[in-house]
Image (cartoon, rainbow, N blue to C red):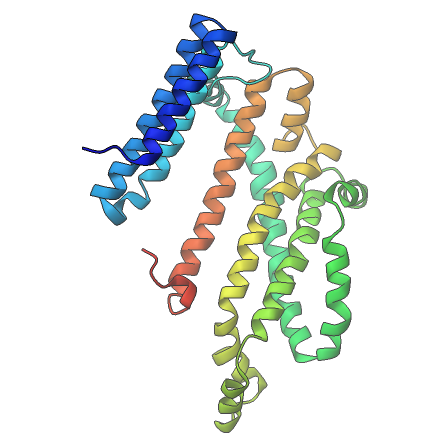
Length: 309
């Protein structure tokens, strides 16, 4: 059986780096380097086998194999090279911290994600959709409002967060306000462009059927705008979590992901910092994936969804 070129290239690179490690770090460093590349080559070979034998079913398995491979390499490298836990803790230490800090992580999750990010996300996206319909109805608003929106969207979150914290207080309301500002204009721009995406012939056909503005909006333009709207929702899903966490750096109660990260860094409790990062990453990925799944179900007719499993 002939090995794939990528496996051969990785093997050659592993041998080269192992030799360099032997010259610079000694025998133990060479062994660690060899183990790291052995795990990487094994993970790559497993994914190649999955794609070749399993086919489309590997779409959900291959990312898990890749993630597991990276975690094992991380664990071997950190422990083998003796990296300080202050600089980079191993995955097992992070997992142990998550297991022993469930109550703290849950309290921070509720404060940051449920109260701050989700409430601001819902308010900002709904307000943007309503504004998009109004802007689409009156074209002079589009010419006047969108340039202002582009200006506000360019403002750094670290600049507006302290101001909104002073305005709305130190609890979750100020974090929700930051999220609203961050998600409103990206959502507005996508929704406005989506409402203008229909062809002139399609709009003329609706008028031929004696359809008014609102009937054409509901039956033609809003369905055609769904891909743009979902694109805005996906962009806003990542901005919402980032905005809520960053806003907590500028004042919050004694709970929340941003508060916990900032205080734990000062205490050199880097395992708890990484635990919060893992929870935030999983939450953001799950939120984005849920929106993408809903998009797939509602826009199955769009060319962007063709050929996807």
